[in-house]
Image (cartoon, rainbow, N blue to C red):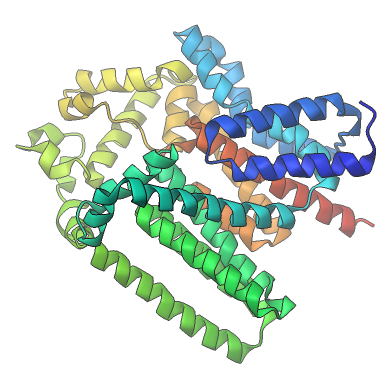
Length: 428
């Protein structure tokens, strides 16, 4: 395809922005990925790779490579193929994003992403409260707060924890750009960025995932200590930290006040019955006593580890993770877990169960690669993302879902373009 470099750069950056702001919408995002990939294939001669780019691309693609190597281990060809299809982003983005690393601006992409994602989700929220007045009334009275977050996520078309993971990262980006743009000395820009940050934090609280709020706050603290201190003097930093701490505790206070059940849950439910790990059916009413408790999650993990060791070294196969786990619940008389078909909810254990030692190793290296990029670039957004996605996958398995695979693969490759460009500058 004969196209000038200037037009080529504009087109790929438009595609990447469109992919970034549709990450929370599976169908349009998929179409943009397909169109972008087709465009890059037509212009394959423009793709550039060096040894470092290929090495990092290999780490990103590791989970897909392991799944391909162990594809023979699936009992169901169709389900195995379906699982494989979800992971194609792990090769598509390394090829067509990293291959264009000299033409992509990480900061510009992040800026477009956080502005448009915040506005799009907030517009959805406005439509949501107009169509579901009942839920807004319940929220104002502090009734079933968790249900409202899931209801809004369903309205957007996503799973609640997945949407909130995305919004936590958006909030971190919004906070970063408050201080990135502060050098412009433009009050309108500052107020606009501050309002975007407040809006994104509000959405994180409304969707109501405690882990997402925790991850967002950790990201904010990282920005304070690693980024702000570079730009303002010590006195201003102390004053700003004081203001932010007041805001932080204000947010927590609102969150607890609007969700009083949270205090009761942590005192009486979350860490109750820890002596019943793997023995939940001994309780008179496990549904009422431990359905949302940590002991239930530990019982699931215990069973997963036991089953994984029984199926070493190659695991049970991508198509058979859940069926085999549910069967194991029944075999070990854990009828409460079997009745509710409770999945692993831990990406490391999920990979260990499905692909054995290779699966656990590939996932570990996948996450270590993120932290490597953050440490080498010393960029706080990359470090924040690495912590957020790692923490999220300790209590969920986002690398078996489109919204987790594409979300992580996209941003890791964007971070890689930034890293490779810093290397190019250092070697000049």
